[in-house]
Length: 515
Ligand code: KIV
Ligand code: ZN
Image 1 (cartoon, rainbow, N blue to C red):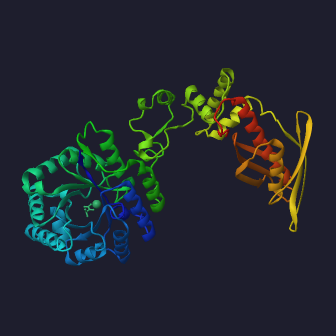
Image 2 (cartoon, rainbow, N blue to C red):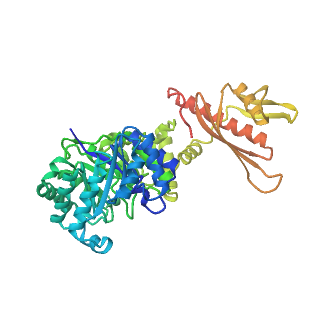
Image 3 (cartoon, rainbow, N blue to C red):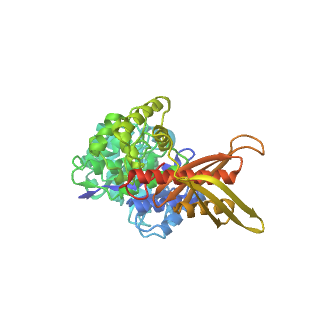
């Protein structure tokens, strides 16, 4: 298999997008994740751009072993010196020099003629080679450069020592068929390309960055420059996760080609970059969007439940997700509804299921997203409220700043009163421990929320708890003007649910969630 080098520029071009700047610690964290993803090259920054960029490249070059670490430089000695200095602690270092070659850039930005540009490009590559054998050259705005001149530059910089020649579609102007042809043209008209790797670097102004990169690969490019979540200048760069998954998923099309990416690390990288940069990933973004593996249509949900591949071309586990998501909403069918309830540990008779499904459909017409809590509320209502195995008859708690909190609790079960007492770290703890002793469940309080229902010192306190026991997990709720009583009742409510469902499910697995 031939490898497509993945050159990640999240920390350089990605960071150039408005509002996405990262501090040193954050850059290092991202670089560590890129290394776990197993990218081949990390472009860590543009050392001459600022002291902060210099320090980031220097630190990453020192700390990250494995991938090659690249630093960007204009085709100027002072830039190359700075990049070389920042990278010197890493033996796998690359200096990436660039110089614009399109007519519009040469005339207005650089005010230089073709022969001057050609000379400057060659000189800068030769100079960079003094610091490392791994030199990459980018003719900026290549896709708008005269092809014949581009071929001349490419041929000359490879002869001067560039091991990689990168063809940037700097302004996202290219169209896949045309960009592919350009790569082929360069291979035919710059014979030195046999001795170097052709890379591509595509921007997404027309939404074609990934398509252009893949078409370039089909035409002989062997390195792709890209970023996590496709972040970057303006509309961004080619998205790393889309490229890696396209090559993996369509092996039949990209015959004999592969990347080294550990795709199971993709979600983690995407979330990390989104969190650090504050660049939210759109829900329908390919591979890493919230909805990329979510299905709401009843027909699709039914298909997925029968055979995942009916509606999924990739396995969510391959990108680091635990499973596909069936979103419960008005388009969901009975099959998905039943399957979701089973996942929650709830099994109903056919009749109960029919009634519950009807209520679910009515609710889904009014409410956009139906959460698991909504489903359990429907079920509890439908099959009449959960029968109380235990009810609270009496509770007394003594507590104070100099006493050991102690609770005495009387519960009624099958018309019999059962009493016990226990100490705890506080009055609530003492009350719940006493309930545990009577009920015989050792509950772990996963969540405890209390809020006042109305205003005033005499307001009702509403307590909701989420309790985990060896027989399952459940939510309990209660309200009282006495918050200790409300806590005990909410806890008991959760215990009663656990007992009811675990009995009802009989043979079901231990530890299911009833919420
Ligand atoms: O978009 C571009 O042309 C670049 C170069 C510096 C490679 O980012
Ligand atoms: Zn760029």
